[in-house]
Length: 115
Image (cartoon, rainbow, N blue to C red; front, side, top):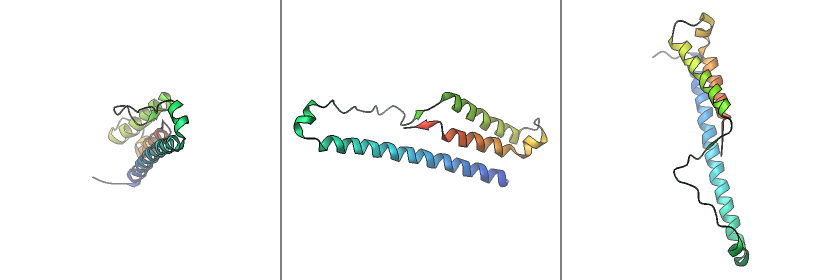
């Protein structure tokens, strides 16, 4: 398998995507921990009247999608970039710069999730 500059750029975009997911996971854990500490620091009388701590469903995904339109656009960009890399029916400029579409779709995908 031959690696060119475009492949390294796409790998870098994927690393940025996974770093963002790790950041979101850490933020979610920090928020849960802060909520738990805040609840435990309340006095007993206030704690009895406080609403119950909501229990998170273990089967629910840990991330929320901010915009499904952005998800579709990002997926289409990534698929177009990969198709331009693999197929020969695309214009030559698109075949040469396939990595622009793929990495743009990946970086757009970064902004599609929140906790």
